[in-house]
Length: 486
Image (cartoon, rainbow, N blue to C red):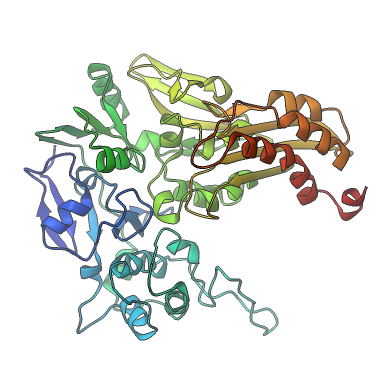
Protein backbone atom coordinates (compact mmCIF):
# COMPACT_ATOMS: atom_id res chain seq x y z
CA UNK A 1 0.00 0.00 0.00
CA UNK A 2 1.16 3.53 -0.74
CA UNK A 3 0.76 6.74 1.19
CA UNK A 4 -2.86 7.79 0.81
CA UNK A 5 -2.70 11.12 -1.00
CA UNK A 6 -4.86 12.75 -3.63
CA UNK A 7 -3.63 15.68 -5.71
CA UNK A 8 -6.19 18.51 -5.80
CA UNK A 9 -5.47 21.61 -7.88
CA UNK A 10 -1.79 20.73 -7.81
CA UNK A 11 -1.57 20.19 -4.04
CA UNK A 12 -1.22 16.79 -2.39
CA UNK A 13 -3.91 16.16 0.21
CA UNK A 14 -3.95 13.24 2.69
CA UNK A 15 -6.87 10.82 2.77
CA UNK A 16 -5.94 9.20 6.07
CA UNK A 17 -8.81 9.15 8.56
CA UNK A 18 -11.48 9.62 5.88
CA UNK A 19 -14.42 7.27 6.11
CA UNK A 20 -14.68 5.03 3.00
CA UNK A 21 -18.29 6.05 2.39
CA UNK A 22 -17.33 9.72 1.95
CA UNK A 23 -17.99 11.02 -1.54
CA UNK A 24 -15.43 13.08 -3.42
CA UNK A 25 -17.87 16.00 -3.29
CA UNK A 26 -18.23 15.95 0.50
CA UNK A 27 -14.48 15.50 0.94
CA UNK A 28 -13.70 18.47 -1.31
CA UNK A 29 -16.24 20.71 0.40
CA UNK A 30 -14.88 19.74 3.83
CA UNK A 31 -11.53 21.03 2.56
CA UNK A 32 -13.07 24.40 1.72
CA UNK A 33 -13.47 23.80 -2.01
CA UNK A 34 -17.13 24.73 -2.10
CA UNK A 35 -17.46 25.56 -5.79
CA UNK A 36 -18.79 22.07 -6.51
CA UNK A 37 -22.36 21.77 -5.22
CA UNK A 38 -24.79 19.01 -4.37
CA UNK A 39 -27.95 19.50 -6.37
CA UNK A 40 -29.47 16.04 -6.77
CA UNK A 41 -27.01 13.55 -5.19
CA UNK A 42 -27.71 11.07 -8.00
CA UNK A 43 -25.71 12.29 -10.98
CA UNK A 44 -28.48 14.07 -12.87
CA UNK A 45 -27.69 17.78 -12.46
CA UNK A 46 -23.90 18.12 -12.81
CA UNK A 47 -23.54 20.79 -10.14
CA UNK A 48 -20.82 18.62 -8.58
CA UNK A 49 -18.73 18.17 -11.73
CA UNK A 50 -14.95 18.08 -11.33
CA UNK A 51 -12.05 17.12 -13.59
CA UNK A 52 -9.94 14.01 -13.07
CA UNK A 53 -6.85 12.87 -14.96
CA UNK A 54 -7.61 9.71 -16.93
CA UNK A 55 -5.57 7.80 -19.50
CA UNK A 56 -6.18 8.47 -23.16
CA UNK A 57 -5.71 5.95 -25.94
CA UNK A 58 -2.24 7.29 -26.82
CA UNK A 59 -0.64 7.00 -23.37
CA UNK A 60 -1.24 10.60 -22.37
CA UNK A 61 -3.79 12.25 -20.08
CA UNK A 62 -7.38 13.13 -20.87
CA UNK A 63 -9.03 15.62 -18.51
CA UNK A 64 -12.36 13.94 -17.78
CA UNK A 65 -15.40 15.40 -16.07
CA UNK A 66 -17.19 13.19 -13.53
CA UNK A 67 -19.88 13.56 -10.89
CA UNK A 68 -18.08 14.08 -7.59
CA UNK A 69 -21.32 13.34 -5.71
CA UNK A 70 -21.25 9.69 -6.82
CA UNK A 71 -17.54 8.91 -6.66
CA UNK A 72 -16.10 7.73 -3.34
CA UNK A 73 -13.01 9.75 -2.53
CA UNK A 74 -11.26 6.47 -1.74
CA UNK A 75 -11.50 5.63 -5.45
CA UNK A 76 -9.42 8.74 -6.20
CA UNK A 77 -6.52 7.82 -3.92
CA UNK A 78 -3.33 8.62 -5.82
CA UNK A 79 -5.26 10.45 -8.55
CA UNK A 80 -5.40 14.05 -9.75
CA UNK A 81 -8.48 16.27 -9.33
CA UNK A 82 -9.07 19.78 -10.63
CA UNK A 83 -12.03 21.78 -9.31
CA UNK A 84 -13.45 25.06 -10.57
CA UNK A 85 -11.21 26.84 -8.04
CA UNK A 86 -8.17 25.24 -9.68
CA UNK A 87 -9.02 26.49 -13.17
CA UNK A 88 -8.75 30.22 -12.53
CA UNK A 89 -9.10 33.09 -10.09
CA UNK A 90 -11.23 36.26 -10.08
CA UNK A 91 -8.18 38.17 -11.27
CA UNK A 92 -7.02 35.58 -13.81
CA UNK A 93 -10.02 33.73 -15.08
CA UNK A 94 -9.76 30.55 -17.11
CA UNK A 95 -10.94 30.97 -20.73
CA UNK A 96 -14.05 28.92 -19.97
CA UNK A 97 -14.88 31.06 -16.94
CA UNK A 98 -14.25 34.25 -18.91
CA UNK A 99 -16.56 33.23 -21.76
CA UNK A 100 -19.31 32.18 -19.33
CA UNK A 101 -19.10 35.60 -17.65
CA UNK A 102 -18.82 37.60 -20.88
CA UNK A 103 -21.76 35.92 -22.60
CA UNK A 104 -24.14 35.85 -19.65
CA UNK A 105 -23.90 32.13 -19.00
CA UNK A 106 -24.37 32.49 -15.24
CA UNK A 107 -27.17 33.99 -13.19
CA UNK A 108 -27.63 32.58 -9.67
CA UNK A 109 -24.30 30.78 -10.09
CA UNK A 110 -25.24 27.56 -8.33
CA UNK A 111 -24.72 25.35 -11.37
CA UNK A 112 -21.92 27.42 -12.91
CA UNK A 113 -18.84 25.68 -11.44
CA UNK A 114 -20.18 22.33 -12.64
CA UNK A 115 -20.80 23.72 -16.11
CA UNK A 116 -17.31 25.22 -16.10
CA UNK A 117 -15.67 21.89 -15.26
CA UNK A 118 -17.66 19.93 -17.86
CA UNK A 119 -16.94 22.64 -20.41
CA UNK A 120 -13.24 22.62 -19.52
CA UNK A 121 -13.04 18.87 -20.15
CA UNK A 122 -14.32 19.46 -23.69
CA UNK A 123 -12.07 22.53 -24.06
CA UNK A 124 -9.06 20.32 -23.37
CA UNK A 125 -10.18 17.43 -25.61
CA UNK A 126 -7.10 16.91 -27.76
CA UNK A 127 -8.97 16.12 -30.98
CA UNK A 128 -11.44 19.01 -30.69
CA UNK A 129 -11.05 21.21 -33.72
CA UNK A 130 -13.10 23.25 -36.15
CA UNK A 131 -14.57 21.22 -39.04
CA UNK A 132 -12.35 21.38 -42.09
CA UNK A 133 -13.50 23.51 -45.00
CA UNK A 134 -14.18 21.91 -48.38
CA UNK A 135 -12.93 23.85 -51.42
CA UNK A 136 -12.80 26.96 -49.27
CA UNK A 137 -16.41 26.59 -48.12
CA UNK A 138 -16.83 26.30 -44.33
CA UNK A 139 -18.51 23.12 -43.16
CA UNK A 140 -21.96 23.70 -41.72
CA UNK A 141 -22.32 22.75 -38.07
CA UNK A 142 -25.38 21.25 -36.46
CA UNK A 143 -27.23 22.24 -33.30
CA UNK A 144 -25.04 20.01 -31.13
CA UNK A 145 -21.58 20.90 -32.47
CA UNK A 146 -20.02 24.32 -32.62
CA UNK A 147 -17.80 25.91 -35.27
CA UNK A 148 -14.89 25.31 -32.87
CA UNK A 149 -15.60 21.57 -32.69
CA UNK A 150 -17.24 21.80 -29.26
CA UNK A 151 -19.60 18.86 -28.68
CA UNK A 152 -22.59 19.98 -26.61
CA UNK A 153 -23.07 16.41 -25.39
CA UNK A 154 -20.21 17.29 -23.03
CA UNK A 155 -22.80 19.38 -21.15
CA UNK A 156 -25.69 16.90 -21.36
CA UNK A 157 -25.36 16.07 -17.66
CA UNK A 158 -25.42 19.69 -16.47
CA UNK A 159 -28.71 21.41 -15.64
CA UNK A 160 -29.37 25.14 -15.28
CA UNK A 161 -32.68 26.40 -13.95
CA UNK A 162 -32.42 30.15 -14.42
CA UNK A 163 -30.06 31.28 -17.19
CA UNK A 164 -31.29 29.27 -20.15
CA UNK A 165 -28.94 27.32 -22.33
CA UNK A 166 -28.37 29.69 -25.26
CA UNK A 167 -25.77 31.90 -23.51
CA UNK A 168 -24.08 28.79 -22.11
CA UNK A 169 -23.93 27.35 -25.61
CA UNK A 170 -22.62 30.67 -26.92
CA UNK A 171 -19.82 30.54 -24.35
CA UNK A 172 -18.95 26.98 -25.36
CA UNK A 173 -18.90 27.81 -29.07
CA UNK A 174 -16.71 30.89 -28.49
CA UNK A 175 -13.82 28.93 -26.99
CA UNK A 176 -10.58 28.80 -28.91
CA UNK A 177 -7.66 26.43 -28.40
CA UNK A 178 -5.63 26.43 -25.17
CA UNK A 179 -2.68 28.84 -25.22
CA UNK A 180 0.87 27.53 -25.35
CA UNK A 181 1.49 28.24 -21.67
CA UNK A 182 -1.65 26.44 -20.43
CA UNK A 183 -0.47 24.05 -17.69
CA UNK A 184 -3.44 21.71 -17.94
CA UNK A 185 -3.07 21.48 -21.71
CA UNK A 186 0.62 20.66 -21.33
CA UNK A 187 -0.26 18.01 -18.74
CA UNK A 188 -2.03 16.02 -21.46
CA UNK A 189 1.27 14.90 -23.00
CA UNK A 190 2.25 12.88 -19.92
CA UNK A 191 0.50 9.83 -18.46
CA UNK A 192 -1.98 10.17 -15.61
CA UNK A 193 -0.93 8.82 -12.23
CA UNK A 194 -1.18 5.08 -11.79
CA UNK A 195 -3.89 3.82 -9.49
CA UNK A 196 -2.09 2.37 -6.46
CA UNK A 197 -3.42 -0.44 -4.35
CA UNK A 198 -5.10 1.08 -1.34
CA UNK A 199 -7.20 0.25 1.67
CA UNK A 200 -9.25 2.77 3.63
CA UNK A 201 -10.84 1.66 6.89
CA UNK A 202 -13.47 3.65 8.75
CA UNK A 203 -16.53 3.39 10.98
CA UNK A 204 -18.82 2.34 8.12
CA UNK A 205 -16.56 -0.29 6.55
CA UNK A 206 -13.52 -0.88 4.38
CA UNK A 207 -12.74 0.24 0.83
CA UNK A 208 -10.03 -1.80 -0.87
CA UNK A 209 -8.52 -1.30 -4.31
CA UNK A 210 -6.45 -4.41 -5.15
CA UNK A 211 -3.28 -4.21 -7.18
CA UNK A 212 -4.46 -6.68 -9.82
CA UNK A 213 -7.20 -9.15 -10.71
CA UNK A 214 -5.79 -12.15 -8.78
CA UNK A 215 -5.68 -10.03 -5.61
CA UNK A 216 -9.24 -8.83 -6.25
CA UNK A 217 -10.51 -12.38 -6.75
CA UNK A 218 -8.73 -13.56 -3.61
CA UNK A 219 -10.38 -10.74 -1.66
CA UNK A 220 -13.78 -11.69 -3.10
CA UNK A 221 -13.23 -15.32 -2.18
CA UNK A 222 -12.58 -14.22 1.40
CA UNK A 223 -15.45 -11.69 1.41
CA UNK A 224 -18.04 -13.00 -1.09
CA UNK A 225 -20.61 -10.39 -0.04
CA UNK A 226 -18.27 -7.48 -0.78
CA UNK A 227 -19.70 -4.69 -2.94
CA UNK A 228 -17.96 -4.33 -6.30
CA UNK A 229 -17.50 -0.65 -7.20
CA UNK A 230 -16.48 0.50 -10.68
CA UNK A 231 -17.94 3.80 -11.89
CA UNK A 232 -20.17 4.00 -8.79
CA UNK A 233 -22.97 5.57 -10.83
CA UNK A 234 -25.45 3.10 -9.31
CA UNK A 235 -23.89 2.42 -5.92
CA UNK A 236 -23.26 6.12 -5.36
CA UNK A 237 -27.00 6.79 -5.58
CA UNK A 238 -27.66 4.08 -2.99
CA UNK A 239 -25.08 5.62 -0.67
CA UNK A 240 -26.44 9.15 -1.03
CA UNK A 241 -30.19 8.67 -1.12
CA UNK A 242 -30.73 5.46 0.80
CA UNK A 243 -27.87 5.58 3.26
CA UNK A 244 -26.45 2.30 1.98
CA UNK A 245 -23.10 1.19 3.36
CA UNK A 246 -20.91 -1.81 2.60
CA UNK A 247 -18.80 -3.63 5.15
CA UNK A 248 -16.37 -4.27 2.30
CA UNK A 249 -16.25 -2.36 -0.98
CA UNK A 250 -13.82 -3.46 -3.68
CA UNK A 251 -12.72 -0.86 -6.23
CA UNK A 252 -12.22 -2.59 -9.57
CA UNK A 253 -12.43 0.34 -11.98
CA UNK A 254 -8.67 0.67 -12.48
CA UNK A 255 -7.73 -3.05 -12.61
CA UNK A 256 -5.66 -3.51 -15.81
CA UNK A 257 -7.13 -6.96 -16.50
CA UNK A 258 -10.63 -5.44 -16.60
CA UNK A 259 -9.60 -2.60 -18.92
CA UNK A 260 -8.62 -4.62 -21.98
CA UNK A 261 -9.91 -4.14 -25.51
CA UNK A 262 -9.41 -6.68 -28.30
CA UNK A 263 -10.67 -6.93 -31.87
CA UNK A 264 -10.31 -10.39 -33.43
CA UNK A 265 -11.66 -11.91 -36.65
CA UNK A 266 -14.60 -13.53 -34.88
CA UNK A 267 -15.30 -11.22 -31.93
CA UNK A 268 -14.71 -7.97 -30.09
CA UNK A 269 -13.86 -8.23 -26.38
CA UNK A 270 -14.49 -5.22 -24.14
CA UNK A 271 -13.04 -5.05 -20.64
CA UNK A 272 -15.77 -4.72 -18.02
CA UNK A 273 -14.15 -1.74 -16.26
CA UNK A 274 -13.70 0.47 -19.31
CA UNK A 275 -15.97 3.49 -19.05
CA UNK A 276 -18.66 3.83 -21.69
CA UNK A 277 -16.91 6.93 -23.03
CA UNK A 278 -13.69 4.92 -23.40
CA UNK A 279 -15.56 2.09 -25.12
CA UNK A 280 -17.13 4.55 -27.54
CA UNK A 281 -13.73 5.95 -28.48
CA UNK A 282 -12.06 2.53 -28.76
CA UNK A 283 -14.81 1.09 -30.94
CA UNK A 284 -14.67 4.14 -33.21
CA UNK A 285 -17.85 3.18 -35.07
CA UNK A 286 -17.16 -0.56 -35.39
CA UNK A 287 -20.55 -1.45 -33.85
CA UNK A 288 -23.28 0.89 -35.19
CA UNK A 289 -25.86 -0.41 -32.70
CA UNK A 290 -23.68 0.72 -29.80
CA UNK A 291 -23.15 4.05 -31.57
CA UNK A 292 -26.91 4.56 -31.36
CA UNK A 293 -26.93 3.62 -27.68
CA UNK A 294 -24.12 5.80 -26.37
CA UNK A 295 -25.69 9.28 -26.80
CA UNK A 296 -28.91 8.03 -25.17
CA UNK A 297 -27.21 6.42 -22.16
CA UNK A 298 -27.64 8.96 -19.35
CA UNK A 299 -25.19 11.83 -19.96
CA UNK A 300 -21.55 12.31 -20.82
CA UNK A 301 -20.79 12.88 -17.14
CA UNK A 302 -22.27 9.48 -16.33
CA UNK A 303 -20.70 7.74 -19.34
CA UNK A 304 -17.29 9.05 -18.28
CA UNK A 305 -17.53 6.78 -15.21
CA UNK A 306 -20.19 4.12 -15.87
CA UNK A 307 -19.08 0.75 -17.21
CA UNK A 308 -20.70 -2.03 -19.23
CA UNK A 309 -19.72 -4.47 -16.50
CA UNK A 310 -21.46 -2.34 -13.91
CA UNK A 311 -24.61 -1.96 -16.00
CA UNK A 312 -24.84 -5.74 -16.36
CA UNK A 313 -23.77 -6.40 -12.79
CA UNK A 314 -26.68 -4.50 -11.29
CA UNK A 315 -29.10 -6.75 -13.17
CA UNK A 316 -31.57 -3.91 -13.65
CA UNK A 317 -34.40 -4.62 -16.11
CA UNK A 318 -34.21 -1.02 -17.35
CA UNK A 319 -30.48 -0.81 -17.97
CA UNK A 320 -29.76 0.43 -21.48
CA UNK A 321 -26.86 -1.84 -22.46
CA UNK A 322 -28.54 -5.26 -21.91
CA UNK A 323 -31.12 -4.96 -24.75
CA UNK A 324 -28.37 -3.91 -27.16
CA UNK A 325 -26.01 -6.67 -26.05
CA UNK A 326 -28.81 -9.23 -26.26
CA UNK A 327 -29.49 -8.19 -29.86
CA UNK A 328 -25.76 -8.51 -30.55
CA UNK A 329 -25.76 -12.05 -29.02
CA UNK A 330 -23.05 -11.00 -26.58
CA UNK A 331 -21.67 -13.11 -23.76
CA UNK A 332 -20.05 -12.26 -20.44
CA UNK A 333 -16.79 -13.63 -19.10
CA UNK A 334 -17.07 -14.37 -15.38
CA UNK A 335 -13.87 -14.75 -13.34
CA UNK A 336 -13.19 -16.21 -9.89
CA UNK A 337 -10.29 -17.84 -8.09
CA UNK A 338 -11.44 -21.08 -9.73
CA UNK A 339 -10.97 -19.72 -13.26
CA UNK A 340 -13.16 -18.21 -15.94
CA UNK A 341 -16.40 -19.19 -17.64
CA UNK A 342 -18.25 -17.64 -20.54
CA UNK A 343 -22.02 -17.26 -20.29
CA UNK A 344 -24.30 -16.12 -23.14
CA UNK A 345 -26.04 -12.96 -21.99
CA UNK A 346 -29.40 -14.49 -22.82
CA UNK A 347 -28.73 -17.02 -20.03
CA UNK A 348 -27.22 -14.50 -17.60
CA UNK A 349 -30.31 -12.88 -16.04
CA UNK A 350 -32.38 -15.15 -13.78
CA UNK A 351 -34.76 -12.74 -12.00
CA UNK A 352 -35.23 -9.16 -10.86
CA UNK A 353 -31.67 -7.90 -10.27
CA UNK A 354 -30.49 -11.51 -10.14
CA UNK A 355 -28.09 -13.39 -12.38
CA UNK A 356 -26.04 -16.57 -12.67
CA UNK A 357 -23.01 -14.73 -11.27
CA UNK A 358 -21.91 -16.63 -8.19
CA UNK A 359 -20.50 -15.32 -4.94
CA UNK A 360 -16.83 -14.56 -5.48
CA UNK A 361 -17.25 -13.95 -9.22
CA UNK A 362 -16.97 -10.73 -11.16
CA UNK A 363 -17.54 -9.78 -14.79
CA UNK A 364 -14.14 -9.55 -16.47
CA UNK A 365 -15.23 -8.79 -20.03
CA UNK A 366 -18.05 -8.74 -22.57
CA UNK A 367 -17.65 -10.54 -25.91
CA UNK A 368 -19.54 -9.56 -29.05
CA UNK A 369 -19.40 -12.05 -31.93
CA UNK A 370 -18.57 -11.02 -35.49
CA UNK A 371 -19.75 -10.49 -38.18
CA UNK A 372 -22.51 -8.07 -37.25
CA UNK A 373 -26.01 -7.90 -38.70
CA UNK A 374 -26.51 -5.20 -41.30
CA UNK A 375 -29.83 -3.72 -40.14
CA UNK A 376 -29.69 -2.42 -36.58
CA UNK A 377 -31.43 0.17 -34.41
CA UNK A 378 -31.90 1.14 -30.78
CA UNK A 379 -35.21 2.68 -29.71
CA UNK A 380 -35.38 4.24 -26.27
CA UNK A 381 -38.71 5.53 -24.98
CA UNK A 382 -38.23 7.97 -22.10
CA UNK A 383 -39.71 11.20 -20.80
CA UNK A 384 -36.62 13.15 -21.86
CA UNK A 385 -34.50 12.74 -24.94
CA UNK A 386 -31.26 12.55 -22.95
CA UNK A 387 -30.21 11.86 -19.37
CA UNK A 388 -33.24 9.75 -18.49
CA UNK A 389 -34.20 6.20 -17.60
CA UNK A 390 -35.97 4.06 -20.19
CA UNK A 391 -39.64 3.31 -19.99
CA UNK A 392 -39.07 0.85 -22.85
CA UNK A 393 -35.87 0.03 -24.71
CA UNK A 394 -35.72 -2.10 -27.84
CA UNK A 395 -32.62 -3.13 -29.76
CA UNK A 396 -32.80 -4.73 -33.21
CA UNK A 397 -30.22 -6.66 -35.24
CA UNK A 398 -31.59 -8.07 -38.50
CA UNK A 399 -29.70 -9.78 -41.29
CA UNK A 400 -31.68 -9.05 -44.44
CA UNK A 401 -30.53 -10.88 -47.57
CA UNK A 402 -32.14 -10.27 -50.96
CA UNK A 403 -35.08 -8.66 -49.17
CA UNK A 404 -35.66 -11.64 -46.85
CA UNK A 405 -35.04 -11.55 -43.08
CA UNK A 406 -32.46 -14.33 -42.66
CA UNK A 407 -31.95 -13.81 -38.92
CA UNK A 408 -33.50 -11.50 -36.34
CA UNK A 409 -32.28 -10.75 -32.85
CA UNK A 410 -34.29 -8.38 -30.63
CA UNK A 411 -33.44 -7.34 -27.06
CA UNK A 412 -36.02 -5.64 -24.87
CA UNK A 413 -35.79 -3.72 -21.60
CA UNK A 414 -38.45 -2.30 -19.31
CA UNK A 415 -41.12 -4.88 -20.16
CA UNK A 416 -40.26 -7.71 -17.75
CA UNK A 417 -38.41 -8.44 -14.51
CA UNK A 418 -35.25 -8.90 -16.57
CA UNK A 419 -34.00 -7.77 -19.96
CA UNK A 420 -35.31 -10.33 -22.46
CA UNK A 421 -34.95 -11.61 -25.99
CA UNK A 422 -38.14 -11.32 -28.08
CA UNK A 423 -38.03 -14.90 -29.34
CA UNK A 424 -41.60 -15.04 -30.66
CA UNK A 425 -41.13 -11.85 -32.64
CA UNK A 426 -37.82 -13.08 -34.04
CA UNK A 427 -39.57 -16.21 -35.29
CA UNK A 428 -42.31 -14.09 -36.86
CA UNK A 429 -39.69 -12.19 -38.86
CA UNK A 430 -37.23 -14.86 -39.98
CA UNK A 431 -37.77 -16.25 -43.44
CA UNK A 432 -40.20 -13.50 -44.42
CA UNK A 433 -39.72 -10.50 -46.72
CA UNK A 434 -38.66 -7.31 -44.98
CA UNK A 435 -41.79 -5.34 -45.83
CA UNK A 436 -44.16 -3.07 -43.97
CA UNK A 437 -46.67 -5.92 -43.95
CA UNK A 438 -44.19 -8.25 -42.25
CA UNK A 439 -43.20 -5.52 -39.78
CA UNK A 440 -46.84 -4.87 -38.94
CA UNK A 441 -47.62 -8.56 -38.40
CA UNK A 442 -44.49 -9.14 -36.32
CA UNK A 443 -45.32 -5.98 -34.36
CA UNK A 444 -48.58 -7.56 -33.23
CA UNK A 445 -46.55 -10.48 -31.90
CA UNK A 446 -44.08 -8.15 -30.19
CA UNK A 447 -46.94 -6.33 -28.52
CA UNK A 448 -47.39 -9.44 -26.36
CA UNK A 449 -43.71 -9.93 -25.44
CA UNK A 450 -42.76 -9.69 -21.78
CA UNK A 451 -44.93 -8.85 -18.80
CA UNK A 452 -45.09 -5.04 -18.77
CA UNK A 453 -46.39 -3.31 -15.66
CA UNK A 454 -47.81 0.04 -14.60
CA UNK A 455 -45.43 2.39 -12.78
CA UNK A 456 -44.59 6.08 -12.59
CA UNK A 457 -42.70 5.98 -15.90
CA UNK A 458 -45.37 4.39 -18.09
CA UNK A 459 -48.44 2.18 -18.04
CA UNK A 460 -48.42 -1.45 -19.14
CA UNK A 461 -50.72 -0.56 -22.02
CA UNK A 462 -48.37 2.17 -23.22
CA UNK A 463 -45.38 -0.14 -23.05
CA UNK A 464 -47.20 -2.78 -25.11
CA UNK A 465 -48.30 -0.15 -27.61
CA UNK A 466 -44.72 1.06 -28.15
CA UNK A 467 -43.60 -2.51 -28.75
CA UNK A 468 -46.39 -2.95 -31.28
CA UNK A 469 -45.22 -0.02 -33.43
CA UNK A 470 -41.45 -0.41 -33.02
CA UNK A 471 -40.94 -2.69 -36.02
CA UNK A 472 -42.93 -0.40 -38.32
CA UNK A 473 -40.68 2.44 -37.18
CA UNK A 474 -37.61 0.28 -37.84
CA UNK A 475 -38.87 -0.58 -41.32
CA UNK A 476 -39.51 3.08 -42.09
CA UNK A 477 -36.01 3.97 -40.91
CA UNK A 478 -34.21 1.26 -42.87
CA UNK A 479 -36.23 0.58 -46.00
CA UNK A 480 -35.92 2.40 -49.32
CA UNK A 481 -38.68 4.88 -50.30
CA UNK A 482 -40.03 2.28 -52.75
CA UNK A 483 -40.15 -0.37 -50.01
CA UNK A 484 -41.90 2.02 -47.62
CA UNK A 485 -44.50 2.78 -50.27
CA UNK A 486 -45.05 -0.90 -50.86
